Amino acid sequence: MEPIYKRVVLKLSGEAMAGEKGTGIDQETISSIADQVKKLQSMGVEIAIVVGGGNFWRGRSSKEMDRATSDYMGMLGTMMNALALQDALEHMGVVTRVQSAIEMRQVAEPYIRRRAIRHLEKGRVVIFGAGTGNPYFSTDTTAALRAAEIEAEVILLAKKGVDGVYDSDPKLNFEAKRFDTLRYIDILKLGLGIMDSTATSLCMDNRIPLIVFGIDQPDNIVKVVIGDNIGTHVKEE
Image (cartoon, rainbow, N blue to C red; front, top):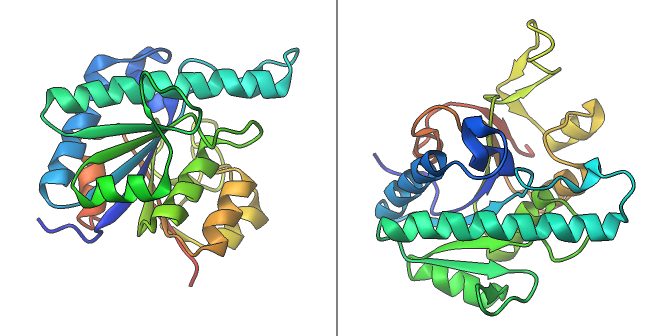
């Protein structure tokens, strides 16, 4: 098995970290993710990971709280996920660095682009926590931004409970159609809820391919990187 990508950004939602529990951290799920990351690293793939925080806190669900405060709380949730994933990886012997967009020197490095790239070149897995460090920006936007900054070849958008992009919610509409390929402009025109418009535009402007796939099936992360035809591929022609 030969990987078709050299440097990737893996975007994990907070829900993906929670497994079947729905909230918090499911250790078995995180160990499964870490095992797949280790397999990719052994193939020579340079891996950066962006983690969400929705398993702890979803800022937009709090109507009465100040939006900026709520978003900062969500950033702290991403850091808990980043540290849990780092611990699982290092238990498997994978050298890992967590970089935070909000300074917290006791637990993580500050995000520095050149340092992140150097870690990747040395074969370390880099986990980006705390989003962009700014409120009003999602972790999907973080994934697009970091992918552009480190010159990643693709963003792997790992989703829980869905195996690609559909024209409507497959949980509500059993006749929903799954797309095999899409253009970023189609996502914006059709209002498909894969990523927010800021993240979508950033990927489109920087011509970064995106693969949306389900994380529920074992080894799907590895399968995507070695070129198996799963999920929905999004790119500009």
